[in-house]
Length: 155
Image 1 (cartoon, rainbow, N blue to C red):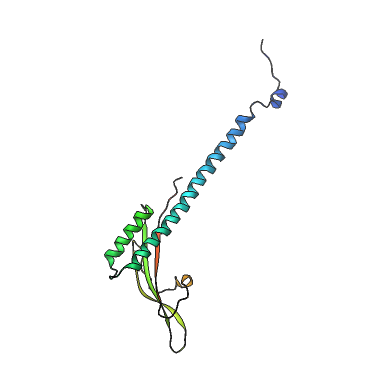
Image 2 (cartoon, helix red, strand yellow):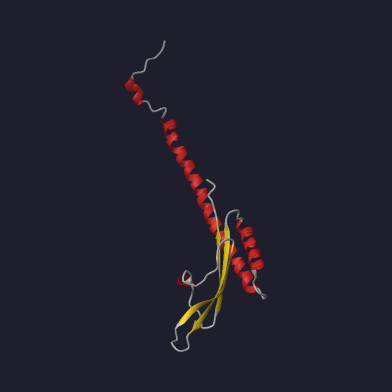
């Protein structure tokens, strides 16, 4: 004998709710897991880029000889190695000096040298850097190293 189930009793049954909840919950859990992996990888890549830029800046600050195109190419290769860069990478180095006008006493940052490698040009002037440069004593110099690397998310 077969048991007949009415429509009303079918609506009151609760033995299939776990399957319905799983259909909604599992895709969201997968999406959240993948999002966490992508965000973690993005922050890891930003950190690797900063550390690679620090390494290149340290190399340049210790250099006793003149920096030429070959040295800049090698610095870019070091940067690419440290960032595991397989995309478009670029490196720009700028030497800035603080100069004070003897008559007016106005101090300005002056670009002494700027060179870019990897598809990025050196600075012609410091207008794009001016807001990020610190105040320095008259005659002080600093090396500004800017690194760019491409990152594409895995998912």
